[in-house]
Amino acid sequence: MTGAVAAAAGGGCHIFNGCGFPAPGLQDFAWKPIFTIGSFSFTKPMLLAILAAVVVIGFFWAAFRKPKLIPGRTQSLGEMAILAVRDQILRPSLGARGDSYLPFLVSLFFFIYIMNIMELIPILQFPVTSRIGFVWPMVFIVYFLYLYLGVKHQGAWGYLRNMIPPGVPAPIYIILVPVELLRFFVFQPFTLGVRLFGNMFAGHLLLTIFTIASWYLLSLSVGLLYAAGSFALAIFVFVLETLVTLLQAFIFTTLTATYIASSVEPAH
Image 1 (cartoon, rainbow, N blue to C red):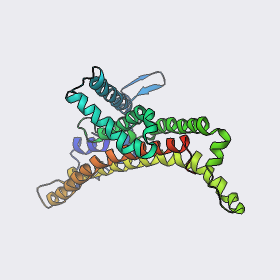
Image 2 (tube, one colour):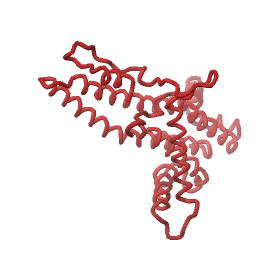
Image 3 (tube, one colour):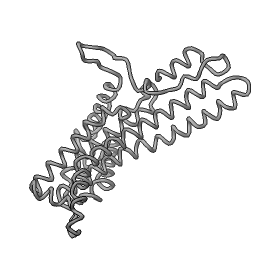
Image 4 (cartoon, helix red, strand yellow):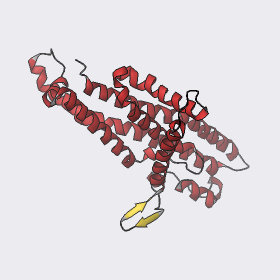
């Protein structure tokens, strides 16, 4: 339960007892430390990120620790998960030659998805990726990976040269070169992280707003109608978020595969 929801419910706050609407905001994305050691504070989002990693590692370990020719239920689910990432994300961007990157992309996709879906799980009720500090490390890993692969496969000069589309009039290069360099080195990693963070931040905020409003407007009078409308919107956002959590993991991983593909083999 977020701070605003707890304040509203715990204090019996609603429109008909004169209490102002406890509007959610940035305070609902800040958590009190679970424990503190010196200057280090361990918070709920950190715990959820670790839990997400444990879930991903634990599931695939359980699925493939003793693989069988005729797979059981867990192994079948694991194979379906891997094939889904391979056929829907990796192969369209990299083809069969990119299968060596499949473990990385599978881990990335499901780690992000589990952190996202925690928003909709009772008690957990928070998407870790709505905190930008948990998104940037993944962006930096992807960023340095595709830079490393670009230099490895094309050479430093070849990688820089292939960023610039050929065959344009010479004066255009004055504008095109800095724009393309900014796109590769700044805009790509920035938008990769902000897209995931922004969507999960907005979704969690909307869900919190309509949940609080349902409680705030609840009464046995005409407020019941408003509360029902707000609750219906909360259900709608909840259902929408089940799709958004999956879609954002898919987009992040697909863009990662696309960036790797452009590093391994230039587009032109």
